[in-house]
Image 1 (cartoon, rainbow, N blue to C red):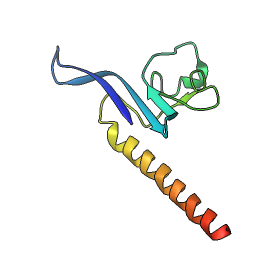
Image 2 (image 1 turned 90 degrees about the horizontal axis):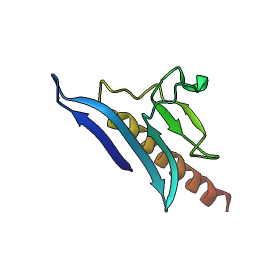
Image 3 (image 1 turned 60 degrees about the vertical axis):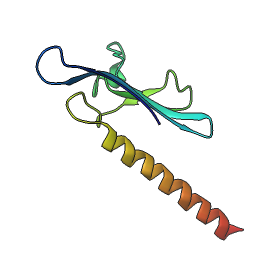
Length: 100
């Protein structure tokens, strides 16, 4: 996972102003989250500016990311998501071993 968070403490407490979280496996980008605004995309209005890029056409295929925010740490959510992916991968490997 590649993590980029832009933090600021110009006025008041430390705040997050932007982020990008990329998840990779074996040299392939699986998905990423970012906070780049897309105000003209009505499909993202539910969580604007927070969204996730997913295949196919990962650069342009975006879905809302309602679990991400600027007001609390995002890493715990991301770690849980990756743990679930790993768990699914391991279960799939076990099923393949049983099937053969």
